[in-house]
Length: 149
Image (cartoon, rainbow, N blue to C red; front, side, top):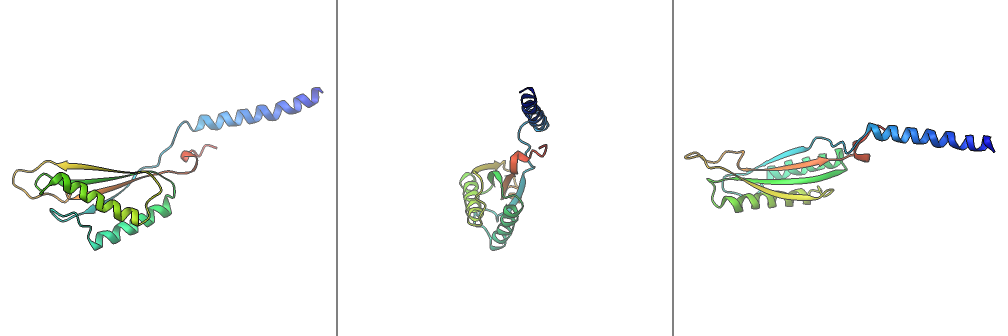
């Protein structure tokens, strides 16, 4: 009977040691760096050009191939105060980009749309930074990227 109990205790103790050791090596989620893509727009426009649409579709395909697990997707529309209807324009840019992204198949994670308005420069036209949409994907991986076990 003592041999039987000893035979049971050894594997249980060993598995407990290795499971706590592995857990100690990976405490919490180990996120990969986010991936960003920038879509440019003409001044006062929210239309996604054909060339930008093609670029988006290629990027979406690459993201889905490289990162099949995705934690979240942010789409951030921007406009300059110098542009007509800046608040609505930023929203329309983000929405138009989101449609292309979704139609392209980037649907593996919750999607959030945000907007930002750049301050107006006194006399200059809006910059290309202010006329863009940023698509940001937070890639994930199996087991929260914990490679310790």
